[in-house]
Amino acid sequence: MDFLTPELVGTIISGLLAIILYFIQRFTGVKIEEKHKRDLHDALMSGAMAAVTHGPSAGIDVLKLQAIRHAQHSVPGALKALIPGDTVLDTIAARYVSEAFARLNARHGEPH
Image (tube, rainbow, N blue to C red):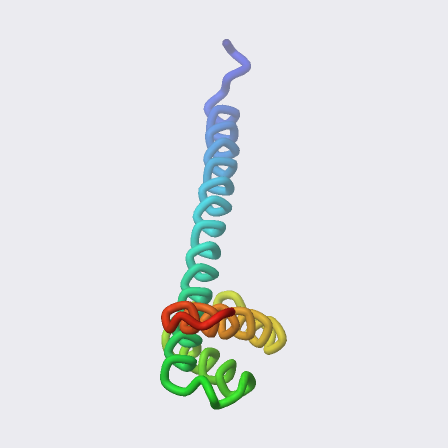
């Protein structure tokens, strides 16, 4: 066991700690990104529902904009962390506005 000098043991421990730290950072980083995505989608959905409920005749572009503005005010941290492009937000908002219309119509017994 003469080959296990204090320097070698220190190097091994430092290496193991670096590996453990790397995996902890990757795991928590992924969890944080998932939370931001979930928060953004939730905010866009609630914004779309509110927009459609309060003014379904406004037109799809206005309703998408209202949903996006709601998300910008509700979850600015998620937007800052994820940095989605305008096209991405527009696409997601369009989907949620369509879903909000379908839910609203289903509540009122109208066909989709």
